Length: 98
Image (cartoon, rainbow, N blue to C red):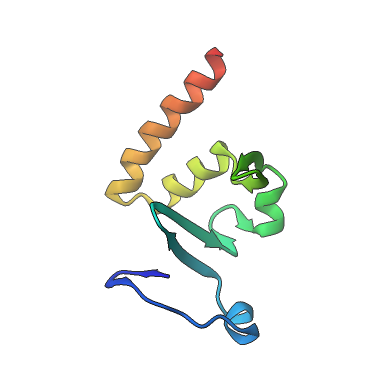
């Protein structure tokens, strides 16, 4: 698991799974954030309504829609999110063109 101080090993059991709503995971070069609740979009079931399906390592994975991700980044509005909004808007425009 990634933390602000770097990676740490974590024993995952039922209690940890039940009580953790945000995961920052790393595996080799892959960083993955898993969130149970994403303001302002909502909980997983609400995110899943608009999610897009991608194939990753031979498995189908639901990924937050670009519109929902834009809403989250605008809501957070940290400097890195402001930059991400510009990048996501450009990706969205490219998708419309193709």
